[in-house]
Amino acid sequence: MNVAYQPHVETYKRNQFFTADRGTVLLMLYQGAIDFLTKAKERMSEGDAGGKGNFISKAHAIISEFITSLNHDVGGEVSRNLEDLYRFMLDQLMEAHVGNNAKPLDNVIGLLAGLQQTWEQAIVKARREGVL
Image (cartoon, rainbow, N blue to C red; front, side, top):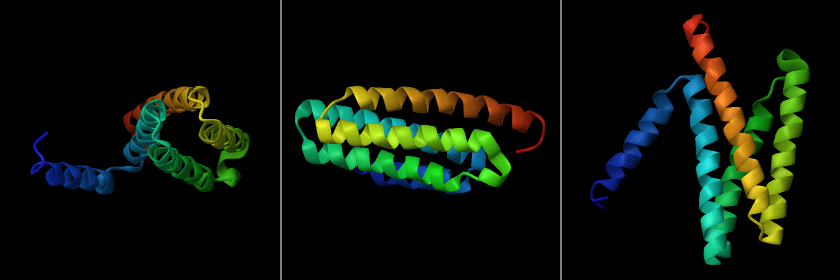
């Protein structure tokens, strides 16, 4: 990609994020976490401990935000189960980072991809029903 063009791409992505509806933002966050963990695996295989840690930290921040955004009063058991799953993911990220092991990253990527797909289906349904 042309280096002069790069700032425009970043501006476009930032504008897309800030003008998106809640459902789109949620899906973008899932994809961001998946992308960060994929990059962490690449850095791990290259022996770049700093890069690996940086990308794991970014994914950790997104998953932590998922936890803080849960509303247990409305979500009940579903939100409690999601919190448990997100906390498991955070434990897996720590295991991957400390043990320099890509397998826990694969586990989290798989879980995030499954949740992303589920949310995507729910968002499509909500949009069809005029809820979102």
